[in-house]
Length: 216
Image 1 (cartoon, one colour):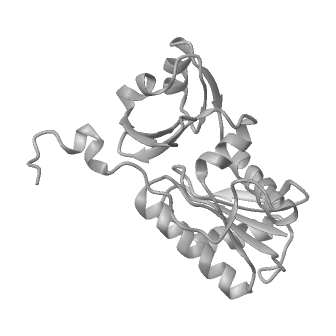
Image 2 (image 1 turned 120 degrees about the horizontal axis):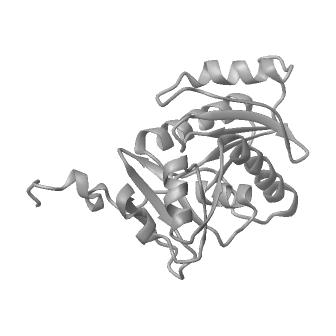
Image 3 (image 1 turned 180 degrees about the vertical axis):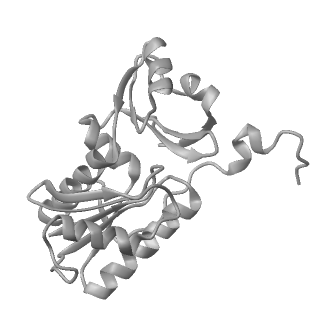
């Protein structure tokens, strides 16, 4: 039994699964969220007791909004310690790519306050931080773009010639189950034992936060 926690989209999500599929899942309305209540609700939805046996705890490690990423990892660590099970961390971009079915996709992730993280398959693996009005320019021409995209942004990307795959939390949770199983049974893939947050470009690269502000 695998428990999966994902706090890097706008709505934190938790699920349980095995055999490559979800048995139950749910989202909280927003971050911050009562993750204890979310976990209890999902276990009940899946017909499992609150103390049901879990073999591994999986969490997305970002990039994402600072508080949500760190809070999700801290909660997952607590659950893993309380149940004496391994903790597995998965970069959010890897989980979204798995959900989209394309490891070469350009992944876009919400950074909060109208900003987006952009990951591409360039050699240095850099993660960019851009404003919403720069998103189209930050995505390579002709690329498959995957992420939790709203209809407006997906439409703009599509109109500019990009292929778009809108990925929701359910798809990411299912991807986390598969990636964790791959790591634990085959010893391969982007999932790792342990979980450390993935940080991206500093916030000062986002123009709305630095216009008119002194530096230094």
